[in-house]
Image (cartoon, rainbow over all chains, first blue to last red):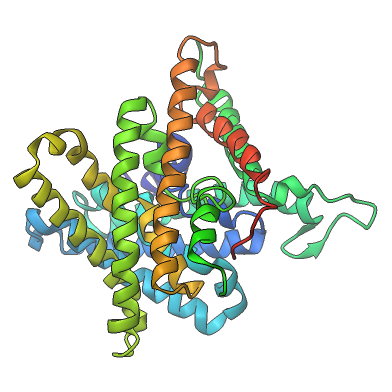
Length: 198
Length: 195
């Protein structure tokens, strides 16, 4: 596969969220605002890309028996970098995201890419695969956040879009809407792009 | 934080259910909920591990990380504590209670990567709970998680004979059911609030 194909496959065709239902644990909670979703998505992209690169680079020197533990620690190290960066540069957003930055460690996508791709492929390919899955993940978060923030707060990225006449849908701010929106997104993608038939 | 441990316990089950309001533990929730029996087994294991690791991580945070001034290593320490505890538990159960090992043991490795366990440990640090509150929060969250997965498993068992739109089968319909359950739990939210 060429580098471009690796990217397209991991970002769209085999997108972790809608194809494998991975990684929704740690992030549905941040989809009530566009900004939080974007930062969270970028944090995941950074962590998954660099942990895939590192895991792939040392894959031949890692004993099989401690493989999982090594992978987890590498992932944790990069997530700590993201956390410290956010605390230093964007304290307000870091506070809003709260525990969810740390929860990137247990995001199934990271472990999934490490086991499924980085453990068998070259470092550069793994890096591109990581960026691809991170971007695909960010797109899903943003797709949900657009609807939630627009209807829930009448704004996008904190900029008011709908005027004062708009009556805010408080359901969009609450947890249940995230479940419904993700289900609808999966439904649309399954029927439109994968042509799932009875 | 003047909220009593007893109130926190009930709040963790109903008003701020770890799964239905904080979205934690979704992966194993969606994949294991096909059968009621295995859901119950996993749920019981989660309750036990959550309660103990909440206590252990509280101790680790307040007596190791803060005095040594290495709070930035919090994530790594928490992950290691959880993984080590689960591993130890697996060994003990296998050695002394083989019968239990065959019903519960297969779920233990799943628990290490369950976001709910790690999430509870992070919550109790951020919200500054004391030891008793942490244990109550851990146990309550575990019971809340068991409640959610049991409900979903029960509904999915009934759903097997029903017609579901093709594109929604599997994860899609489970998410919609979860959304409806979450709506129901929003009804509890006026009773007490923990933030």
